[in-house]
Structures are given as structure tokens and as C-alpha cells.
Amino acid sequence: NQSFRIYTYTFFNRIYNLFDITESYFVIFFYFLKKYKEKKNKKDNIYSDVINMDGVIENTSTDKIIMIDKLCKRILGHPEVLGRIMKGFIKEAENLSLEEIMELIKGKKDHEGNYYFQQLNNVSDIPHHRKVEFDYFCCINLPQKEGTTKRIYLDVEIQNVENSGYSLVTRGQDYLSRMVIYQNGREYDYRNYKNMKKTMSFSRQLKKEMGI
Image (cartoon, rainbow, N blue to C red; front, side, top):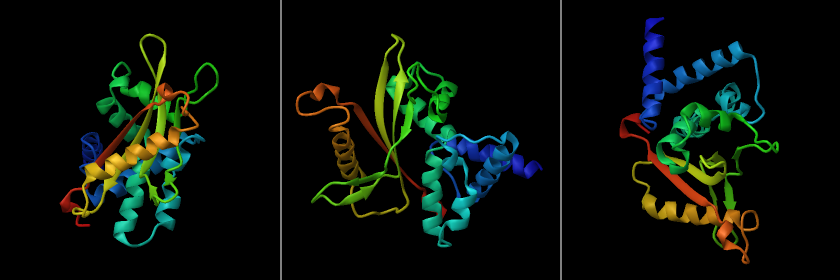
């Protein structure tokens, strides 16, 4: 009906403006994704867990704060959302269209059969430096005009507490350091630091009117 179309449009318009969303829009979003999935009747082994919201809704705590936090993290990984973050803020993506970036996230492979995009383990456990969990941790190989690719490590965070008691900038520095350490032994080692890849961390605080 008309109200559904209005709410759906409003939701995606707000998603484009970096998650200025209210709780009611989550319901519309999940309904939309469910219908879309039924219509397409197709699964993608790279991000099917992102668009399969039924299990999340059933198994999530009834506590509103925990529920919204978990669902926000799922939404972060959806190509419609993650693609806009990359297009809007990553310099190496400026020569790609939003549609091209979304195709990379959805599971496109290069000529050697490797995925351009990977969702990574979000748990960082460094001995004597405690364990932290990224909201959404990934890396992507972005094709460049000259025919090369640039690999970017990306962390996206949603802060659901208005006053956390610490600086988000300071926490971001810690997370960036952990992302660099993650690359040790994968991208670089003590003999070749030049292979260290660019790391980026985004943090968005949910607005007060969410009431959480």
C-alpha cells in the first residue's frame, strides 16, 4: 500500500545518509528483504547470512537494545549499505560506480577465481591486550584504472550508547592498530613492511531519538 512504499523509500533514503534511522524502519527493511529473497529464489554463499533475517529475528534476544545492535551489524554488511560507504569515503573506489562496488561485495571473482570481497573474523584477541569484536570487519580488492587492484581493510562500527565514557577517536586508533596486526603474516612481515595495506575504520553513533 501507499504507506509501505513511503516508509520503504524513507528508509533507504536515510540509509544513504549513513544510518539516520529509527526502530520502525528495521521492520520495513526486513520485510522488504524477505520478499525480495522469495522473489529471486536464489542464494549467494558469500552474503546469504546477511540477507537471511528470519533466523536473526527468531533467535535474537527480546531485549530491544541487544536486538537492534545485532540487526544493525547485519545491515552494515548488506551490499546496498556497505557499497555506499565505500563509494562515499574510500578514495580508491572513486573510479567505480555504486553498482560495480555492490557486485564485488556480492561475490564477484577475478580472472584467477579469487573473490574481490571477504568478510573477515570480527574477533581480535591479542595476548595481554584483551579481546574486542568489530561490528563489521572486511577487506576488498578495488580495481583501479591502470588495471591493478588496491586492497583495503575496513571496519564499520555503530555506537549504540550516547556517552560511552571514552573517546571514539581513541578507540578507533586501537581498532586500526589491531587491523594492521591482523595483516602481519598475511600481507607483510618484518622483512617486508611495504606490503602493509591501507586500513580504515568508520564509526557512526545512533541518534538519541532511537530511545536506546
